[in-house]
Length: 152
Image (tube, rainbow, N blue to C red; front, side):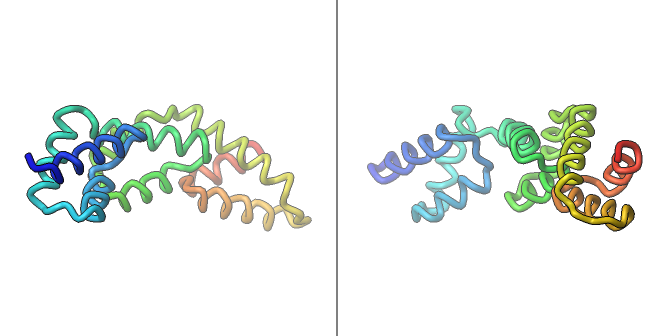
């Protein structure tokens, strides 16, 4: 192992230790660091083998944190994970971390808070604005309308 190779390995380990990363993020970072393709593959294999890099763990962490901290819906989480080139099967595994009751309760709270901010006299227009807001946050349209009709 060359000195450059060892340097890149150490740097990649630190990069993955700081926070969970997707395989795509690590490959991109190694390319930015000008790692040769063969060297990058060896580093990635080392990171996976030594549990620095675990895409399933990354997705679970990503899904639950974006949901709880940013109040993102599943559609937005899926979209962002697909941008990171995460396989669909792993995305579905990660989304199972989100409790359905907590998910609906979060949507209800989000809509109730937003309803207080919207200054609209026409109830149908207000509901439409609420629905647009929630779908832009990544919530499924059918669920959004169910919650609006049930609680607002």
